Amino acid sequence: MIATITLNPAIDIRYNLPVLHLDDVNRVTAVDKTAGGKGLNVSRVLSQLGVKVTCTGFLGGKSGEWIAGQLQNYNLINHFVEIRGETRFCLAIESKEGHTEILEQGPEISENEREEFLKNFDTILESNNYIVGSGSLPYGIGSDFYRDLIEKTKQKGKYFLLDSSGESLAQGVKGKPFLIKPNREEFCKLIGLNQLSIEDMILHAREICQKGTQYVLLSLGKEGAILISENVTLQAIIPTLTDVHQVGSGDSMLAGFAFAHSKGYSIEAILKWSCACGISNAASERTGSVELTKVQHYFNLIKVKELTGGDYGGKYSLF
Ligand SMILES: Nc1ncnc2c1ncn2[C@@H]1O[C@H](COP(=O)(O)OP(=O)(O)O)[C@@H](O)[C@H]1O
Ligand SMILES: O=P(O)(O)OC[C@H]1O[C@](O)(COP(=O)(O)O)[C@@H](O)[C@@H]1O
Image 1 (spheres, helix red, strand yellow):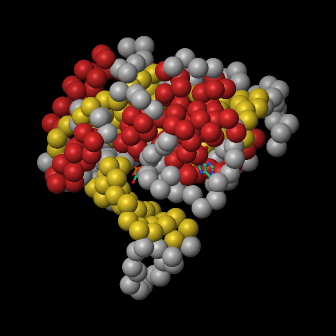
Image 2 (image 1 turned 45 degrees about the vertical axis):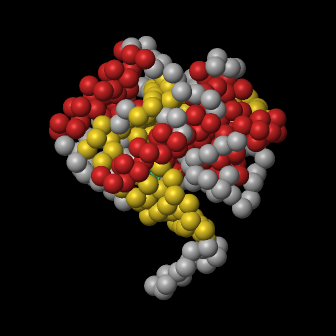
């Protein structure tokens, strides 16, 4: 079984506008409202793939109640800790100018609520082989929190997949998770450089793997993805979609990885599943949502190629 952690869930609102006018009144042409935060997007996609998913994190207030209701609709097992604070709203605006996100910080977590989560987590670890930890941390949760959870998970011989950013990702990597899934921007921040070429990203990712993280799944939006381990580097060449709804594609990709790995598929097939789920989400109107027939369709269109660049420090011929 797979469990997901969403420490800072959100009601995700997506507004579609033809044009976004700043300092003016804007009227939306379409609205979508989902139970979000990266971990809940992962959960919904896993559920669509037929996996029984246990969801944990912190939920509070009326928005927390709304999200709990949504979990039932998707047959997700609710192991959230109830908190005094109010779960946040996050806003995504799709317009001609592009994609704009406005994300609330989220509620503050008290010491007691944090302790309750940790007790709850120990129980979840007993019955789940995969833990997927995604998203930002709310106030009151230290940046080494994922790192501690990763260490607990590893002590039980289970897999921790981490999708975070900034300091919590940097700390998390020190716990040597099974996988991290940064996009290009998150990875550059992790390395501490503004711009990195693909070759340099591969070299840095390989270095991370040499220090104990098993896989770095580098997601590159419409340019596909690269999966790096200590021994192998695979590139996924994907069909590019235009006019996409990209929010939640990274989360869908992570769901695809967890699903395919838990089925024992080959590493090439796992990378294809990951990308096919990301593409299917990008093709969908809904945030964090895939359709199995589309996933299968895209799976067949993806090509996986091994990149050989010689030893660490060498260059990769493809780029
Ligand atoms: N425009 C697109 N066309 C096709 N596939 C896409 C597109 N955008 C995203 N994807 C798929 O979703 C995956 C994750 O997207 P990405 O934008 O890199 O993640 P994140 O949402 O974490 O920033 C990509 O690796 C790709 O497989
Ligand atoms: O937890 P964070 O990092 O603040 O991110 C929350 C936001 O990320 C999302 O999962 C979207 O993420 P992506 O755009 O990276 O796919 C939204 O659902 C949510 O509003």
